Structure formats: structure tokens, C-alpha cells
Amino acid sequence: MSGFDHPPVRSAEQESPQTAARNARYGMILFVAYLLLYAGFMLLNAFQPAVMDAIPFAGINLAIVYGFGLIGAALLLALVYGWICRSPAPLTPTPLPQGERGKENIPLARRQRGEGREERA
Image 1 (cartoon, rainbow, N blue to C red):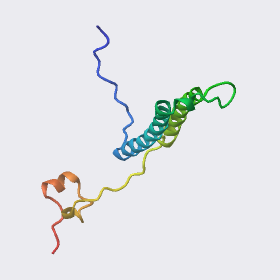
Image 2 (cartoon, one colour; image 1 turned 180 degrees about the horizontal axis):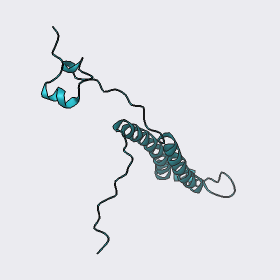
Image 3 (cartoon, rainbow, N blue to C red; image 1 turned 90 degrees about the vertical axis):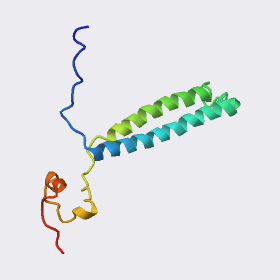
Image 4 (cartoon, rainbow, N blue to C red; image 1 turned 120 degrees about the vertical axis):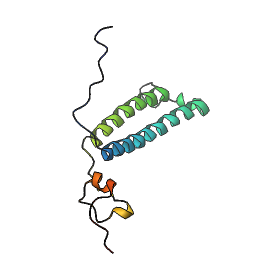
């Protein structure tokens, strides 16, 4: 088929590894929070189904209320994730290996070749 043979579009915006790691950590925390809510729903249905028959208000049973609550929680957590991940993470300096201290201003390529300031005794 013509028109479907192009490569994926690359984003002009590059995300730093620190930002990606932070966002992944936040995503995992929010996922675990939702997983606990969902596990509670499933465990309650599996082991205490009579509780789900209770009618807390307006003639609607708890299963329906909890189900809509899960949908609302998913939307809320997605909004929270979007809000906390909207800015890049602050850059933190990467520590140099033990033998590289004192060579911070020497470009990495020169350090890898062994060029740069001589070791002081």
C-alpha cells in the first residue's frame, strides 16, 4: 500500500534520561495505587459478593458505585500524572568514576583516549 512506507516521525523535543526515569517512577506509583483499588474491587466481588448487593444510595448497588468510582479514579490518576510530569526533571551532575576526578572540564572523548591533565602525585 502506498503512503504507509514512511518511517515514524521523530519528535523535535528530546526528553532527558532523568525526566524519563522520574516520569516512569511516577507512573508506576500511580499504577500501583490504581491496582490496589481494582484488587479491592475484585477481592470484594470474589469473597464478599453480598456486600456488593448493598444499596448505599439512590437505589444503586455498591458494585455499580464502585465500578464507576474505578472509572473516575482512572481519569483522575491520568490527570494527576499529566500534571506532575509536565515539566522536565532538574538536571543532576553525573559523578565521574574514581580515576576521572579532576578532569571535569576535559571532553569525554579526550578522557576516553587518555588525554588531558596529567595525574598529580
